[in-house]
Length: 312
Image (cartoon, rainbow, N blue to C red; front, top):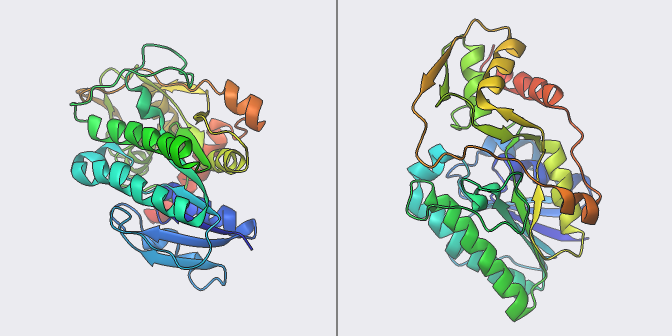
């Protein structure tokens, strides 16, 4: 039976990956230090015969007994509110944490997949963003702690692949949403939904014209699975090209919730990307992957989760 280690496994994405690989018949080792992850996300897996949890900070020496066939490195703060609160930890998990996880992959002869991000493209000058675009990133800006941590992680991953022969994968994840996002996550969809459900003012940054392309979590997990099982070592974008402005997204969520909330405008954060849309040509060609969940369907599923969390 194949064994898989998922760092950051108690986080939003990590916990969905734990579910997927349990369902696929793998033995899953979930590793998390709960800086941003939550025990609630994996509570349903505790006691499962093929699930093991290790509370550990992957920036420290990391040891796992026995064989490990795959390592998915998803440990990292991932929302602006988190990596601005934990800037040093964000840089450490992208650098030291990636180094430790790659070292373990080398020792175990395991296939390694790094969760990178569309943030490596920064505030892009090319639209949509293909994998061969090198990005437009401010290394000393507020967001630089996350952007550069992920860019370093990609470089380290390729170095281990080229120098040590580790079988590696790099996924560049675009904005993803779904159940198990934290209410106080700070990202647009949790913020808009929680405020709309409570009939509170919904703040939109800038004039709301900045865009994001949002992908439902089930589609993303399918893309991750396919990439892991492929032979592709170069970076691959996984995201939904369905692009929407933040103002239109806020309006749509207010409408879906039946809320009386009003939209209020706030100053745009520094270095906030104005546009974001993945070019998924490589994913379609190499993995045969594309997203299927329509935005309204995904938002309704997510809304149900937030209503439950907020007891509304």
